[in-house]
Image 1 (cartoon, helix red, strand yellow):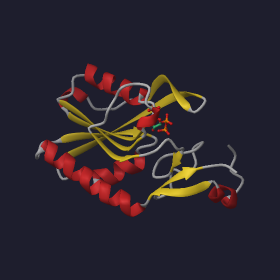
Image 2: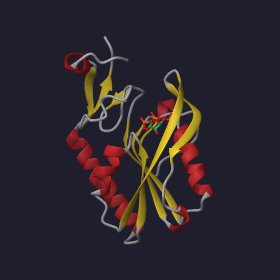
Image 3: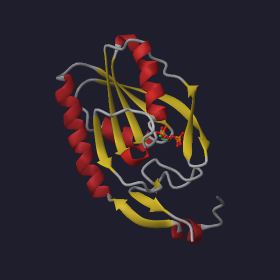
Length: 183
Ligand code: PRP
């Protein structure tokens, strides 16, 4: 995909699926969920880059319990439009997770392969506890069994962009979630 300019860029944003206000309301609920789950205990909130950078930044500001943040960068290799299951940790956390109650913030669960690998990897390092919060869940695409502890939005099988999610690295900066389409 090649973006030639602003007109071309905007023409591929087909429709807004989730508005900024809807995201804000859902973030508040997610913050309340984390606060009640940990009841004052400190947590490590982990952003899975790149897709979750916006979600994580907004979610972190809804969290009232003491909160450290951590970043890891994961790359899944694609076969067509699906991740292949080859998940590479491009950048690992700098914290030792065995000392933490870990909350993983993901942007989307699609086939589930990325999160399955991540959860297995975290569990092998024995965190004090582990929970996963995902912004988006696309259950129709699941090929690997995995469920988040909280999904902010369950969405249909459409190619979505914005609020951290990309198409060929563009559109991550849209403040809402939209359906992408060419033509
Ligand atoms: C996306 C997304 C999830 C993963 C979900 O990451 O951020 O981590 O795919 O797909 P799955 O459930 O089919 O495994 P991607 O590898 O595109 O990298 P990005 O976060 O840098 O956009």
